[in-house]
Image 1 (tube, rainbow, N blue to C red):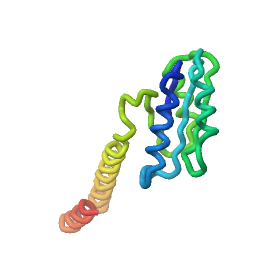
Image 2 (tube, rainbow, N blue to C red):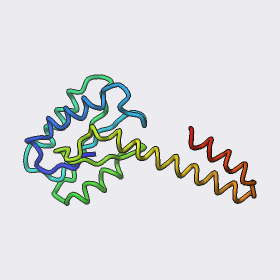
Image 3 (cartoon, rainbow, N blue to C red):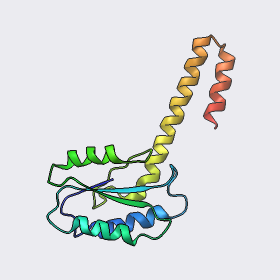
Image 4 (tube, helix red, strand yellow):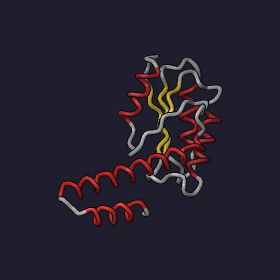
Length: 148
């Protein structure tokens, strides 16, 4: 999701970079990717460039949608609008200048996976406590979960 206000000078190059990265093998682990640009009432050609880029995408490329706020409502409104309209499981926010490079997405996903694995282990161990499992069973479960 990219909130955009008067980004005509960089939006085309940003969308090319993003679609190229997403089309590389193994880059969308959570399913099909959707690129959502939220135009916040730009006075330049931002919206027209996004529409042009969407039409030029080859088959099999991530989908590219443009949402328009109509008038400038601010970045916070644009983010809320985008999150509410996004169709994916996960929503990643980036500015058009990619101040956080899209190439860092795998690092973020690895951190998410580690957190989810830790959370799952904690839930299993809590369940063992709840049912009164002995210490040996708890250690066995902990070792098995840790080495998944």
